[in-house]
Image (cartoon, rainbow, N blue to C red; front, side, top):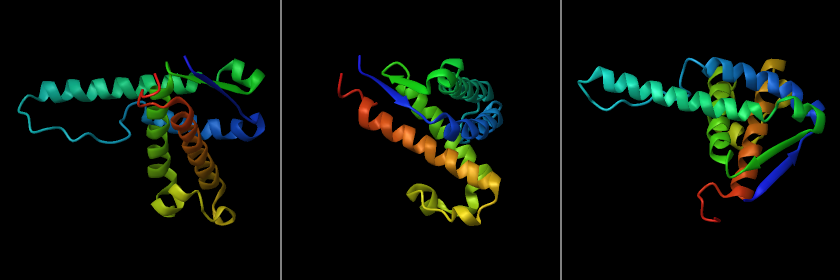
Amino acid sequence: MKRVEVKLNLEAVAPLLDVIKDAADDLGPALAVAPRVPEDPDAEFSGEWKRELLEGQNSDIAAFLSLFGSEFFVTGMVPLDANNREAILRACSAVRLRLREKHLKSLGDDALESGDAPLDDLPEVQHKAFAAYVFLATLQELIVQHLDPTGMEE
């Protein structure tokens, strides 16, 4: 099984983890994207479906956050492999969506996706949220480039 270990600068990443954890906590009771529930007179079905989506999202976020446990703070290494790649991709997406909604809406999608924002003009909270957003996007790119989440490499 292919495995990638990413060495991160602790001084740069540690402050971002606080922003990411805050966004993850916000997501605990809520989905990053409200699902479009099909027209179904069975409210129990749609309620169960939403509950399962939320459990999946929370599980993915827990897997992501577990990468940054005590071992990370000793080694600075984040292990990525076929066992965690999809959960990490989904968790990064959910947190990025939450950061966008809560802190970054005013920047616009072009600035967010290009990574080109007027950092000197941003308040500290927005600056950190933007840095966390870019960090998560970079982590997703590493996974896609090196671990092929489509399963075509295996």
